[in-house]
Image (cartoon, rainbow, N blue to C red; front, side, top):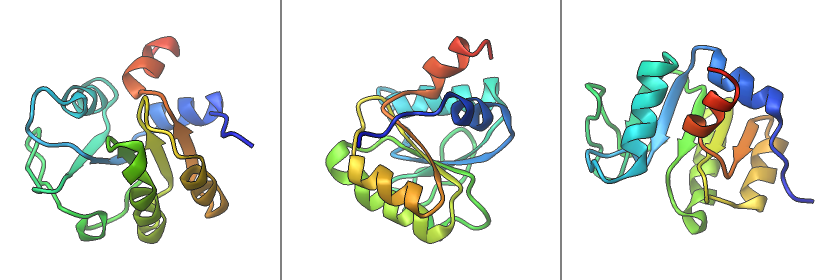
Amino acid sequence: MAHQNDPQVIRRLLTEHGRWAVVGLSNNPRRAAVGVSLFLKDRLGMEIVPVSLKGDDVHGQQGYTRLADVPGAIDVVDCFVNSSRVGAVVDQAIAVGAKAVWLQLGVIDEDAARRAAEAGLDVVMDTCPAMEAPALGL
């Protein structure tokens, strides 16, 4: 059965202060992750933790190369990686005890979404916080 996003989960994730590990966030201004993470930080008040292959510091926040290297709790793992690679990121999110995974617009992996849900994580897939927040009046 295909994953269906729960509007109440989306609202809760976007309105409750949280620590978001943004996987795929680098200093490349052409990448959507830069603008969306800035939206999460400045507009919604979320704490942002950049995670990328290079471990770039972004928006004044220390970057990391792996979720396992991020100290402290992670509320949401926001996935800006392509669909063929997101399953491994979701598995890492499960392993580090994240509370939710958010697969960005165009990022779809039904098996990974099922694994996350079965592990007790909230799952949002194939949408963007910068699109969902205005639709909720945020």
